[in-house]
Amino acid sequence: MGSAKNILVVDDDPTVKALICHHLGKHGYLVNAASNPDEAFEILEHKTIDLVLCDVMMEGMDGYTFCQKVRTIDQYKVLPFVFVTSSGSLEDKARAMEVGGDDVITKPFEIEELLIKVQALLRRADIFRVYGAKKNLESAFAPKTAKILLVDDDPSLAKLFQYNLKKAGFDCIIASGPAEGFQMAKQEVPDIIISDIMMPEIDGFEFRRMLLNDDAVRTIPFVFLTSKGDEDDILNGYDLGITDYVLKTAGPRVVVAKVSAIIKSLGKERQKVVTELHQAADSLRVKVVPEKSPTFEGFDIQHWHQPFEGIPGGDFIDYFQIDENNLVIVLGDVMGKKWGAWYFAFAYAGYVRSAIRIVLQSTNDYSPSTILQQVNRSVYNDAKISEVFATLSIIIINKTEKSLKYAGAGDLPLIYKNQNTGAVSRLASQGLLLGFAAEGQFEDISINLSSGDLVIIATDGIIESRNQDNKQFGTERLNKIVENLLPHDDLILAIKDEFTHFTSGKFEDDISLITIKLN
Image (tube, rainbow, N blue to C red):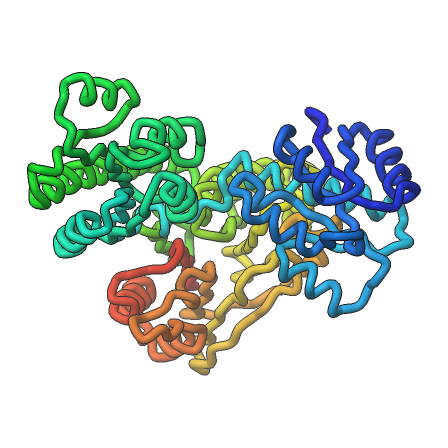
């Protein structure tokens, strides 16, 4: 299980609490027991907890309220939280989810059920922690209005500076003193904090120390705004790691100029991160998405891949020529526009390649469903990735038989156009998402192809992208493009043009699509 996990058990029934603690400890977990929420908060404050098991009905504060309060603590916003309750009604389960719970166990419960749920939730939390799957690239890099927190006990002066900062295009919020400013800094997470020095009870220097002692806000750029210009005061400020020091007598324009310079510097740092990610992506993308489609006699195979926001994401494409007559085509999607998706795409591509090689070395039965099941078992049995959602499509084409076999795991239906009739149909796989269960229920779908027939397989980035009116591109629009295609038209180009026009070039996810045409 690796390093032992810390589990907090909160229950005012000593018998139930002792039973749970005994079995958790027996299975290698470090257990912290509390009889009520007050004791639990003490433990949460002094220990790093990996999961909470909490009774619902307790004297004083109940489990629902406790969970809501836990979720207000930054470090515990995604802490796995399981309710243990004697009521199994749908209303109670809905209430548990509404307040931020992750799961519910109904008393009396089987110990095995408890242990399975604990293990699954801890496994998922590890994924989020290690790979940052909760960090959305869109929100991290999208242009946004800089937020400024101004802390000053002089309301008139604060309003004056707020007016000028807003006029310059900044979002400026005001706190009347350090205590309020500290809370607002943690809640709002501003881009810059500007603070007066001379304030009653807590001065600016102490306020700065308060921020430095809190990991959540210590790195926010800090500017002193003060009427004090003595050399010692200025040096004291810089000793506390401030970004700049502005005299009130300099006027609002100087403050605006200083803030603008700091925001510009932050923007350059953000862009530097994006540039470095691009450079890494350029060196690795060939391993996740080939630079060009394969040449395979009798077939025209093309692909289009466009990473979200130009930053590599979770889609991957691969081709394997098994022998002279058979080619394997692979399309996968590690779901979400996340930092972690990129790394998982790389890992999944490795899993897929390994599984295909193993299967093909041991059998001459070239079956997409057999390959998928091998990949599925690898994912299901790997604690590091089995909690990540991923789809996978596998196609095998045979040039002598002019046939296509297909199986999918939680993917979009394959689009097939019969050139003779012009009919467009969708062939949906019934397979489960990768790693969802030990047996993925994968089945092969076979097509005998005629000259000019088309097959298209895509990830959901195309159909789920929206235009400025918030309308999805959708499957019907994609079908219509295929239906209207003439025999000598370039399908990839036709889809690109229509899709780019529809979305105004603003995609919402990775775009990956493969077309297969029998010449």
